[in-house]
Amino acid sequence: MNKVLGITLVILAVAIAVVPAFSDCQSQGKAITLANGSTIPMKCHWTGVAEIGVGVPLAGVGLMMGFSRRKSNLVMLGALGSVLGILAILSPTQLIGVCGNMVSTCNT
Image 1 (tube, rainbow, N blue to C red):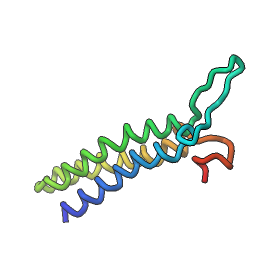
Image 2: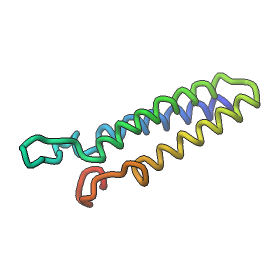
Image 3: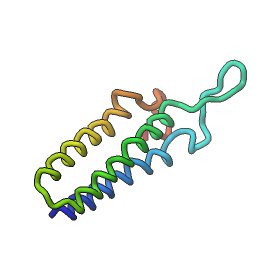
């Protein structure tokens, strides 16, 4: 059972880290153009970067859950995984957000 939970968590963590990199506006060639002509990435790009920062440790938690045999370790790893999962959910919804344009790639 521990190995199944660990493998599932690793798969979800990899999806959390990889999918935003291909679904943000910058990957589609869109950016904010400033008055001086330079461009900066949109909020969805920075959310994708933050999701990498959450997904990598979450994958580590999944790997440790797969190899752990002590119940106390599994409880602590589960708590850490829950906190990281909440951060993964809050990054695009509350903390950083995505683009305000509803037809942007990150909103579809």
